[in-house]
Length: 326
Image (cartoon, rainbow, N blue to C red; front, side, top):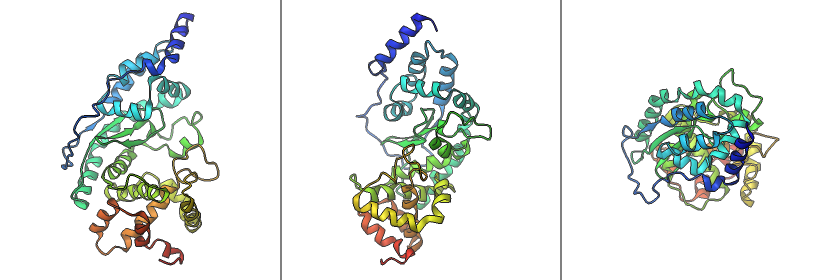
């Protein structure tokens, strides 16, 4: 890279927050709730856009190329994902340059993501059967900076396809231990869509302590499995099932102090166990509630519309599994 190019790049980095100005999504736009599972759009055009920018990018211009040719040109969903998960082309390029082999291997896999629209749509229709008042936002598939497989906003489900690039030939040497554990193959895209779709339905209190957060995540896995056939955290169940009682007793103590450090959003921070075991505990509580319910359709509604998480735990009779009092 020439001296002049280095200076330009350095200037861009120094002013990155100011330099990255994208066309903001309309926050004041009225969100119209769609109740028809067949009318939700599944948008994958941002993946093609990413690879066009990738092919144009060079060390001296990559910050501008990814900003102007990808983040700014992208869909409404990409703009939301940028605001919540990517932040700027500077941060995106940092990750691409730190993992060049992985991103190079991602192209062929990511371009298959659109082929899974059928299973996604099937999950939407299955949810409509189980929960007639379900609503269905548009889904956007895109490539990010390997920090989010999926999230949702009041208007969209946003899926980071970069977290679904695992194949038998994936180069792993650039990846952290956490990424090695959570990276998944592309055919699991429908399961993260189902997980985020369940989150979109949840009518929970805004203020949640550890118990509520764990039930929120775990019930999303549980109901996602019901509508799609699988959930996104099978590795947690493989590790957790032989230790279920021990984990529950540990979690119960953490819930008293509301300490989430060993349970949620701790990828890369915890060394002696898999990250995010709260998803496992929450799944088990939701599963117990459903199994013990006489009316299964009402149970789905109950799981999605919890008002009191402590009462829900009691009603689930999950602790009774370990000989604890109801």
